[in-house]
Image 1 (cartoon, rainbow, N blue to C red):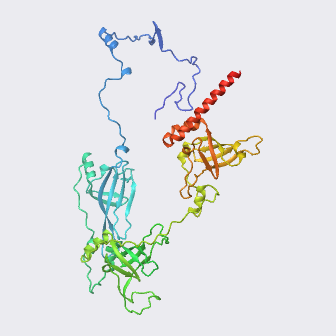
Image 2 (cartoon, rainbow, N blue to C red):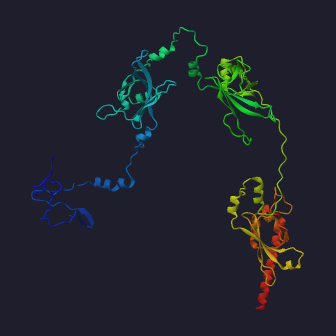
Image 3 (cartoon, helix red, strand yellow):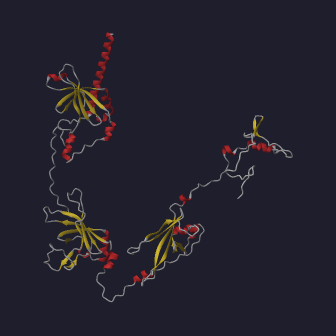
Length: 554
C-alpha cells in the first residue's frame, strides 16, 4: 500500500499532518484579468527557458462559422434519434413466471410392496427477482402431506454463495436443492418461447416415469373368498362428498291447519344416510332450526312389526332394508320416520346420477301445488289521536312495541334551514275581548311546523308571548293514518287557519313571503299569490300616503 509524504517527511495519514508555518498568504489567486472591459484568463507566468502558450490563429472562415453557429445550450443539439423509455426489471418482468414439470424419487424403507415412490412436482421460476418455489400437486386420499414443498426464495447453487439462474435450467437435467434431486421433464409454452427468445435451446422433453406402487394398485387383488356385495372402501373413494339433493314439501295433514312447508332432503351416497333441512322463510313465525332431521340411516323394513320403535332405538340387527336412491322418485310421495314428503324437484347432479345409474327412473320436476290461502285478518284500525305529543310520535306507539323516532327529510332540512314565512293574524272568536288580540303565525319551511306568537297589548288584561310551540298542524277532517298538514299554498290573505280548535284569520304577510312564493309559483295556487300581491300593493300605497302627510306637516 502506497502512501504520500508531506514536506516534514511524515506519511500523509490522519494525525501526521502539520500546518505550514512559513505560509503567509492565504488568499485565493486571481485567475481572470480585464482587457478592454472583457474578463480574460490570466496567462501563466513565463519562467526562464519556457515559451508562453500562443493561441492559434483563426481564419476568417472559422470566425464567421463561430459567429453564425447556433449554440447548443440555448436550443439544444439537433438530434433526431429516438430514445426508448427505461423500464426497470421489476416492472417489465412482473407476473412473468417460468413453469417446469418434474419429479423426485423417494426411497421407501422396510416395505415389501414398493422400493421407491415417484412424486411429481411443479417448479416455478419468478423472473422478477430470480426466486424459485416448488409445489407438489395434491392427490386426494394419498395420506402424504403435499402442497408447498419449498417456499419461494433463492435456491443455493454452490457453497460460494451462488444461486440458480434461469440460464441454469433446462429439460432433462437434475436440479439438486438441499440434498434432493428434482428431475425436470417438461415445461409450458411460455417457458419454451422465453428460453428460445433468449438463445437457449431446450432439450427434448422426457416422459414421467410410472410409479410402481400405483401400477401395482391398478391390478385387482387376488382374493380366495367371494367378495362382498358392497365394498365400503370403493364407496368411500368414489362416493365421498357426492350428495343427492331433492326439493320436497312436508305435508302435515294431521295438524290444525294442514300446513305444508318446503324442505330439502340430502341423500349421502357414501353411507346411504339421509338428512332433512327446513327452508326458512322470512316472517314465518318459526324458530330457525338449522336441521329438521339429523343425518342418519332411515330404515325401510324392520324384521319384527311389534318392535317398540317409540321406546328403543333401531339397530342394524332389527333392520332388513334401508332407504336407497331407488326409493326417491321425483313426483311421488315418500314417508320418512312417520312424515310424508312430496318430492317435486332435484338438482342437476342428482338428475345426472339417475341418468347414469338408474336410467329407468325419470326425474321430471312437477309444479308445486298452490297453498290454500287462509282468510286474511281485517286491517287493524289505528286509534284516534289523543292530543298528547305530535301526530307522528303518537303513531309510532301504534306501529312499534318500542317507539322509534319518525324519519326526517334531511335534504329538505338543510336546504330550507332558517327559512321562515311570517303572517299577521287575528283570532276569530265570539268573545268581544278577543277582537283586539293580534298574533304572528310563523311557518318553518325546514320541517313544515307552525308556531303562533301573541303580541303584547298594554292594559288589555291578556298576557302576550308564546301561544303555540313549534308543531305540525293537521287540517280539519284529516285522519290519523293519512294526515294532511298545512302548507304555504293554504296561507292566503283572508284565509282561515284552524289550529287545534282555534281559528286564525290571516291579515298580512311580510315581503319575504311573496318573494319566496313567486320563486316556487308552480306549487302555489294563483289565488294565494294574487291575494299577497294585492295586500303588498295596498301596503305600498299606505306607506306613500304616510310619507306625503309627514312632508306636509314639516
